[in-house]
Image (cartoon, rainbow, N blue to C red):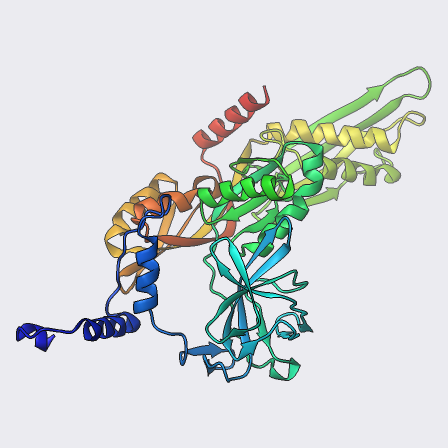
Length: 465
């Protein structure tokens, strides 16, 4: 800099060396324009990468236990698997970087995470779509191995079991928050879906797959809309599984808000033995989270003792599908008060049906409401975007609990209904100008506002019509 200010001429080699040093320390970040669809600028990008980016040799890498290991071709073998893909012809393809030592095709390195030895076979250097066979990979090299049995993304290779203490820390993947439901188009697709998803998760740890027990849907959580679209396309191309991607159904619950008494008499005559069951039940709201409780206060044996279990079973089997949205009914106490029976026509089935119908009509009398899942959010955004994010949360029926400063960012602790934040990742990216991210966890269930409940019930009725 002094030479420049003094007007002295600076040699190109000296300038390049100084620039490379500044890039290596992070003082300068070069920006190079590239058009990937037409390959314009790709060669200059690679030339500048070779000229400016620091050599891996001599750099230190942290390993578990608080120590570090240097990138040295003569050091002990340590390699890190950072990517796994599937090829329709080759099978599983594993990308790895040799951190230390030398890896050869005839080596059988020890996989620290899976506590087993892995047979390598041929090693390759990736170059675009080509894979060039090599006799070894040395420290700093990125290579490819095919058809590994147990190795997955994030695993560490060492020379043998005795060196397992040189385990590299896991790769810090971002937490996926964009929820989608996958619906197989045919019966054949249903049978192949689980296997295809398992292979896909193996290749991309930022894809999380689960099954919602309340709705029965297969839920895929990704980083955004583009990723789930690509995943669906790969399922069809690589595994022959065609799926439709939709927003997941919200796992609502239903409950009651007022006590009531309900009576139902089930009577059916079919020529021979008929069916007769008569019950009187009382329904009471319970505290949040208490679930379902059954009691009986029958006096005088009006409901024979052998049929009381059938009454409880009929009620329990009705609870998974409430009258508002066919969602589970929770947090209520049902008490069997009275009833009657017939010496010939009464049976467990008759009392089971009577109890079920009594509960269905009783819930409608007890002012039923919807409960929705509330998520706890931790949102990281640039401090200048906090106002926009808070305003957006209010529009989603959310509540902020606090804001803390974290350097140039602010951390917002908030809660919001799941129905409003299933696709929040895309909106937050826009609100935070590409620099916002968040995590969310289930927190509790809360009442749905009456106007929102009316809209949900109406939309469901329209969809089923």
